[in-house]
Length: 151
Image 1 (spheres, helix red, strand yellow):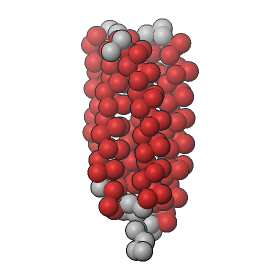
Image 2 (image 1 turned 45 degrees about the vertical axis):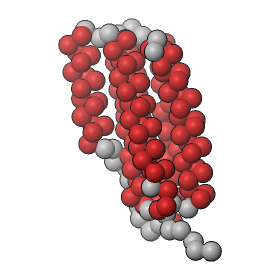
Image 3 (image 1 turned 30 degrees about the vertical axis):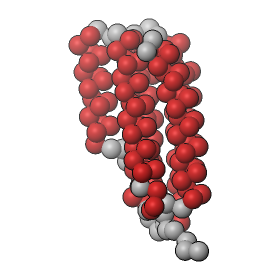
Image 4 (image 1 turned 90 degrees about the horizontal axis):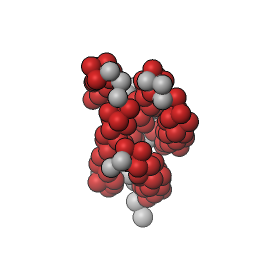
């Protein structure tokens, strides 16, 4: 049976979207606190910790494939966070808008993970299972954000 070498580019894309998620929720904490909605901070911190854990699980797989794990974010994530700040300033700090932006970020996360699973022929069974587990855990978090949004 042939051993599959994991594609480090796919894994680094997953790390980047997790880095985006961390940066997004750090910004959400700041914006929520500016809006006097500090009670949301605990939820946002749990999601940051979840992505930090996901990265720690993915990092060794990238290194086993002979590359360094990315510490960067995606350009699309950087632009999205800039939009979050601008929209918050224009709207005067509406918590509903902030939660909807968080929900869109969670949807983007799922897209990247689903794309990775679609390229499953470039990943070992163990890594595909890891990705599926992480995606399942994120879906639960996504549903909680949807509830907070009233979606």
